[in-house]
Length: 132
Image (cartoon, rainbow, N blue to C red; front, side, top):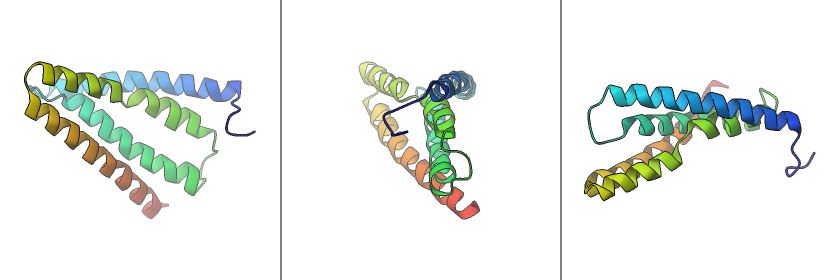
């Protein structure tokens, strides 16, 4: 099967994973935001950082080490993490911060999230490579 063909089972994996990821994102984000009383959306930040760390680790586990079947990328990377990470929420939150006059917080949040999530992917890849 070439990369452009996808089976019904793979679509099922994506759908199930997406549902699990979305619910997990909502619960974790709500929990983190409830523990912080600031303008910074720490829940979304936490979700994006954790998602970056996990996708880096899964990349090594699935693609480099081939420790689980490649079809699990549909469930875990495309489905769960696709539903879990929140770039659209991140973008809207930054728009709202700017609109509310919190330009410095918005810029810090944008740069901080981008830098730490890239570091999260890097750390996930390094950790998985070291452990496996």
